Amino acid sequence: SQQGEEDPQALSIQEGENATMNCSYKTSINNLQWYRQNSGRGLVHLILIRSNEREKHSGRLRVTLDTSKKSSSLLITASRAADTASYFCATARPHQLTFGKGTKLSVIP
Amino acid sequence: GAGVSQSPRYKVAKRGQDVALRCDPISGHVSLFWYQQALGQGPEFLTYFQNEAQLDKSGLPSDRFFAERPEGSVSTLKIQRTQQEDSAVYLCASSLAGQTNEKLFFGSGTQLSVL
Image 1 (tube, rainbow over the protein chains, first blue to last red):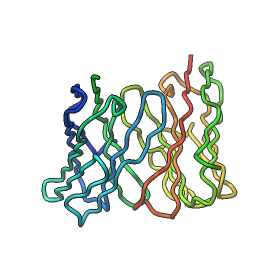
Image 2: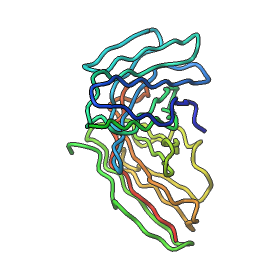
Image 3: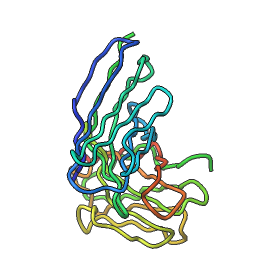
Image 4: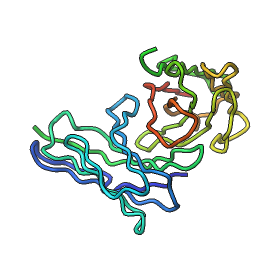
């Protein structure tokens, strides 16, 4: 079963705009991670935020975590055509990393 | 190796055939995971190894699915008597330490089509 739920399922924006994706989950977690998947490829780790952290930055990525609401958001600033991919949140529990269904992002040049 | 390697990249099987999918994790990585990803869905957890020990196999959908990692490095996922619903991409991932509190490195997957 998939614990995380991303929202929206699909997002289409113009190059240069910001993209925001949300993730909600159901049970307590050790950490939450975001991954990117280009079509036909494996997943690539983007960023990890621990349960005692509220915000984290990495380059053009900003992740927030609200454990009281069991939700996280991923912001990609100044998007590029190369950011076109599916984005997944994953919640970590002992021996499992559980993925959501993903947000499909299309960045139009 | 430089990354997680999976073979074959594509596999076509007739219904009822047995298949074996191979995963070569990054050298020295303790943890190894198998995931199943249906078209348009997120990866679904199948099983987890810490070295050669299979610590969690709760995601294996039926007793037709079997995974092993006998020497704590290469892993094989075997599916017996394949069914059409087994068609999916099977992803392998590894991480350095024996816990899930760190990032996973994924292979490109094996796309299985059962006809």
